[in-house]
Length: 369
Image 1 (cartoon, rainbow, N blue to C red):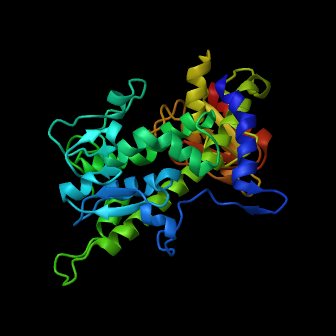
Image 2 (cartoon, rainbow, N blue to C red):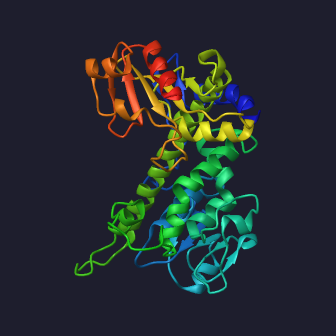
């Protein structure tokens, strides 16, 4: 399985790129150089990245930041203008110019004819959200950007995994918001006003401020969007990806936990397991779906948690028994007949016990109730 091949490579990268055991400290991901530092003489011939002036948005702020993570554009000057003659002299143009031509490094998405998505550019990708300038830059340079930030090369097997993860859980949202694509159909119940795109928007001058200069705000927007991108990548690289190995091992050992093969025990609690579990089940075509996951909590107690029917739902494959729900301590132990019970949530999606064996017994009884 490809994930098993990744395991040793991932651990190696974590030690080399993110954490020094001997030094006892974290080493940050490779970041673009500070644009505020004094210019060197050789920067007189620095490449130029063009984007529009005036009110700015998250997509071009992130696009410019990402381009400047790459060595050819590390020293690039950001030129904000709508003048076609000036833009024509830029090495890369994003979010302006009315042209999408990757052979000439032109990445605008506002023209009537533009309808590109990840899926249209790369048919093996499932996403059909119309791309913004951020999505276009990520589509064409994403693998190189991730490899640069992680200090590895594009052929590293973790790159395509993180490429998909970062698009689906970071860049696609920016694409959709910039293109005015609603997250859902029907009447919304509440507004979400704290997205990265909205926070970038608030860095623009207010309509009634005397100073309408957007240059300082745009620099802040680049830093904000870029910092969040790097932070999210760091999480997926050092936390989400290593959890896959734990889930794989738990599933391999499932029949040693219980004869049903429907209960797994994680070697370490607190890891993000749900998405990995669904993926491993799909890849291995398990005869029976996993119903319960058992793991230790921060206090050393044990939890039994129901596996949901999908990654984005609160419905469970098999909830804990109805007569256990909302009970605690002795009351729960009395009703269930299992010593050491701590609680079962009122919705029945999770419960707790003092010991691993107690949590396992709760799962076993729930399977047959």
